[in-house]
Length: 311
Length: 250
Image 1 (cartoon, rainbow over the protein chains, first blue to last red):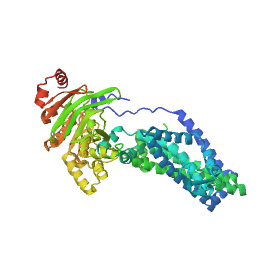
Image 2 (image 1 turned 180 degrees about the vertical axis):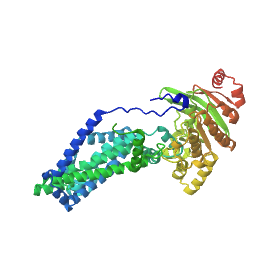
Image 3 (image 1 turned 90 degrees about the horizontal axis):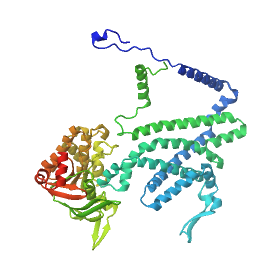
Image 4 (image 1 turned 90 degrees about the vertical axis):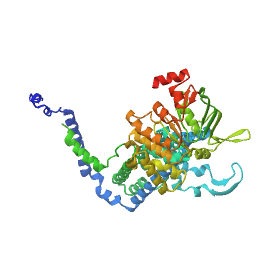
């Protein structure tokens, strides 16, 4: 409302309008509240969840060993996958058509077949090659070893996961490299940097801003994909839980244990990703991303100023 | 310092340089003028082998750019040798091309420490002096995004100078700047010219060319139309094309 006094006083009164009502929002809130209440009620009262059993197994030796195996597989296969991805991405951007073609073929094959099939393939690799040996191609061999000795259960799982991951990572890294302005490469070359040094010191650090978010996604996905190796008998988190409930038939409580662990691990990853993105974002904008604490403070003050409530 | 003999350069079927002949003596400041598309930037980029020439010969400091001559055969230089030659030629770009993930200080010390393996403390000291020289002593820890265009360009000049080049190339260094920021950059370049640096400057700043250049070269359509002292080329152009161009920009 504008009062008549503003023409006299010079500065008009601050506007005090009746805010628009949002009945739809209130209905949505009501529905969500009911559903949440039902969920909590079920979690607390459903006897089949057997929280006592969940508590008993959550930190049991066999589950913890499974968690450790899952972490180990995730970390190692992501590390190898990222390294492979960088190599394949750089190869795909090469001037040499054969090198480019080879990288394309790699990505085509490993993205084109299901991960589970690849895991089974590496698991059965000894049926394809009885032994592996060093030697001259198509010529004599020098030193060899039985494939089953050379590639253990763990390394066949690792091979499958990291080769598959490398194919996906190469696309992510390639997009990141292409996102960096060509002027950066030119400036680096003009300063006397070689291609390799330019890539390492100038292009990749800037590409990281584009690479990190989807890589976080990939890591999250990898953490869960490792559960596929339970099919070849590796005692990861899922297989360990299965082993227990196969013996005592407490399927639901043990799957709850598995869910809790996966959620805990993916949550930790998400926090790590936030700080990694913050690190590589430096210099890219005038302000750095806010930490959760800073954000909470801002949100609080923002709600006071802008009325971010339901209205 | 620079000796171009009948330099030709094509991009596909499009011939951009059609036989450039051109000499720069040590300590000279040469300004390249000409309408856009006349090939001046391309020629500048040929000098440090960012572009490969297709015909003719191009020498910097008596040595062929990008090639080695044995008998009557030319051998391409390895990537490493090309890079090594580039350390002696500084280049400043129209869009600055500072490394955004490094501070001003980081930008300046990167190449001397990484490429030339000079001791970090020594390079830092030099960087501080260079930043003071370009009037940005207090901006050592600022990231490029936090600087204005004019400040970024001055950091870029300091970055190039940190390599102690024998020759400096400027590719339209003030074209991307707001008018009020051009003066600071030109002042730094004037200082540099007075200190005896050999400079080749592609520019539209006629005033700068008139005041600072020893030689002005006017290019159009991939050829050198005329060259001479600023008073000759800018004040008394002989060719019709030069006259038309100057009438448009002045």
